[in-house]
Amino acid sequence: MSGKHYKGHEVSCCIKYFIFGFNIIFWLLGVAFLGIGLWAWSEKGVLSNISSITDLGGFDPVWLFLVVGGVMFILGFAGCIGALRENTFLLKFFSVFLGIIFFLELTAGVLAFVFKDWIKDQLNFFINNNIRAYRDDIDLQNLIDFTQEYWECCGAFGADDWNLNIYFNCTDSNPSREKCGVPFSCCTKDPAEDVINTQCGYDVRAKSSDEQRTYIHVKGCVPQFEKWLQDNLTVVAGIFIGIALLQIFGICLAQNLVSDIEAVQAKMFSVVYRIKQQCSFYSNINLLIAKSEKLIKKLKWSLNFSRAIYRKIRRDVSFKAATLWTVYEH
Image (cartoon, rainbow, N blue to C red; front, side):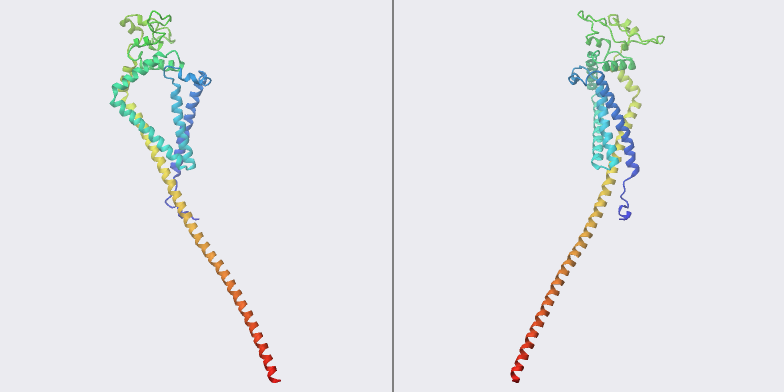
């Protein structure tokens, strides 16, 4: 079969291997994220006691690794294998899944812009809920400490939010040494000190508001987050637009590859159909020839049979004629 049958209908190798290369990196990153998440759960004993997943009152950062890793793994696998094997089902799944993620991101962005106050209330609730569980999980504790250090804040809207934690509240029934204190991540840093004093927040909330400013950051993390977002709005918007464009680009490439594959398959089916028609035509001719040969054989047999009867009749007539002539002579 000559190559002219596929003229104008070829799978683009550039698109195919670009999707494959991009998604194999994406897939490996997903495996890494899943591995980190499972390793963290293993270190905390969660894998040996699955019921402990629901015991944590706050947010477990490991879930972030597992969810992101799982999504990356599924997307990377579908895109990688779909492109390599030219599997239209996996490529369509990749496009639809990526489209759903893009739609969810777009919806979240619109809702965040329209319902700013509601988002702020939910963020406040989220932070306060995790303040209650600060000592319950080491990963959550590290996440809160990092957030407070990076944004130079303390609590959701102020240091008094730490009164929600059983170790830091100021009630008379609290026997903790951290009573009326805050975590060290709330403390202002002294550039002259290389080692962090983890006890810098002890009893600090028992002091006056002016004295507290000397030792800790008094601004809440929600206002600081808003300020950071306003200061870096261009960068954040650029990142989200870049991610969105990358997703749209991936969807378009996958759909382009699907179209190429389906065009080649349609052309191949057309060629196969024509070959089958030709084979059917030749098969019918062969069948007609076979039937003709049988008919000819029958005609030959009939002709031979007729000749034999003719010879016999002629012999009989000749014999009778000879007999009559003999009788006539005598």
